Image (tube, rainbow, N blue to C red; front, side):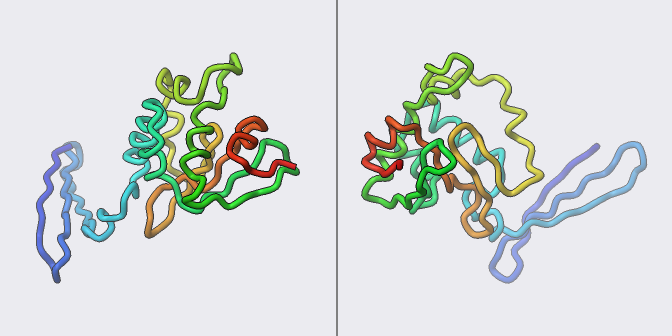
Amino acid sequence: MAFCAFFMSCGGAAVTTNSAVDSASGEETTSEASSEAASVPNADFRTFWGNLKNAIASNDVAALKALTKVPVTVRGTLDDSPETAVGDEKIDLVLAESLKQPVGDDGVTPTHKFVKNLKDEEKQLKEAESSKRFLDYVLELSPDKGWQIVYIYLQDDSMKAAGLPNE
């Protein structure tokens, strides 16, 4: 399949027109995408996933915060744990605690080391839904903000360290 792309200016907004010609049928298809849609950060899940994986694997709280909706909802791991909206005053502490939590089959590997060694990430790239859970993070697609972390589950010791209620 041959592929070409070119840019046109249209009313101040750039428009990308993609043309593809199917080599078997000879049919040409075109699609357009406005730069306004492209300006939404992390609108594409593959881009968001790459940023998320890098932030977690490098144990980078600032990069993880950039991918998080603030205030973010946080709760413990039990069904009856209270939900808490966490704003700027505690978000760095909550994210740092989330990176320390043990995950994986051994139950002791910290989140950031687990993600660093994650090989089977294609399972995370299915884009059919607008919300998904990855480890202790709930991710959602917002039309104006793109993909973001909107919910974090913290274990009891992490809730305590962050000064959040868990009963």
